[in-house]
Image 1: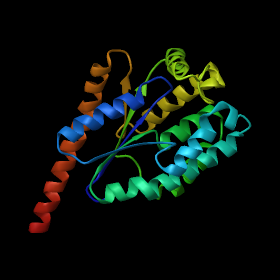
Image 2 (image 1 turned 90 degrees about the vertical axis):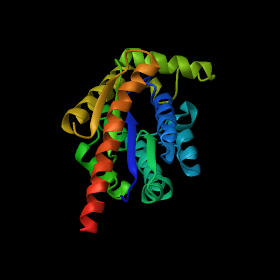
Image 3 (image 1 turned 45 degrees about the horizontal axis):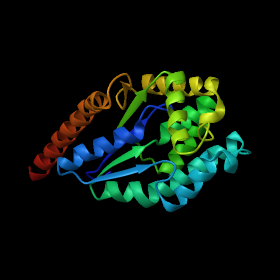
Length: 229
């Protein structure tokens, strides 16, 4: 997609994706890259409304797994069209807190919906756009879920958001799903353990991102050389 780069951050609840995405964005901006920070759901004005329905307990308590899936896909389709695709076409770096793998992990492995069908629907919703790099922030389910619920409680949401209230068994399946996704696509999905200070975890992430930038630069230089020849 032109000269842009697409990086997604994924993982179970409580892994610190938003924090790490912000730190990575600052790091890349200091390197004079144009960076777009976004999230799913909620990267657009429509997405913010869908996020409230999907995650606020008293708004989405009656959603079926299938209804939930299609709401996430609607958000993704709009998000790609309005934010992600234009940014990549302009050569920017897009950092997204959750993308296609979240749907496979939560609605596929978590709820048991057909994985092949989810992949087909993801392909339609994204117009074939996939991250160049996905950082999977892995944390043991019981620890991560407790952290997430505690953070939400500080914001007045006792017991966590709608998905965080689904119980430990569900979240264990989600984590196992993420790890299967990583093992099936190791060139794209890099697992980073959430087992130390925030700065240390960020340093691990930057190793993969800096390598991606170096590889991308080499490809662009080779393309310019070939064109000049």
